[in-house]
Length: 109
Image (cartoon, rainbow, N blue to C red; front, side, top):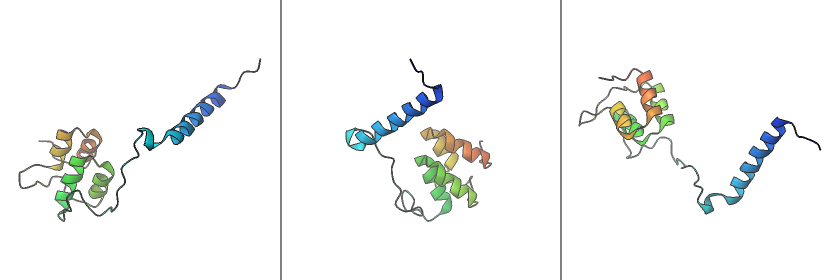
């Protein structure tokens, strides 16, 4: 009896799972990832960059938060209610966004 090398079995198994996933697709309860139509538009159409950062942090959009950080947006800017992006991300449980904001020197106090 012939035995297959372990890596061949693993590759075949993964390929089979991907193929099955493609067959059953989103029509059977497997959701597609959300699509962003316009990278410059924020959740509420904010024009203030601090507000944009707070909205994206609250929504948990790590890529957009990182882009705003890279654009040198003030990570400690506060809204009218005194809330920062870090506070909003933490409240919503977006750990990766919280980590990104802290790494960008967001005030944790």
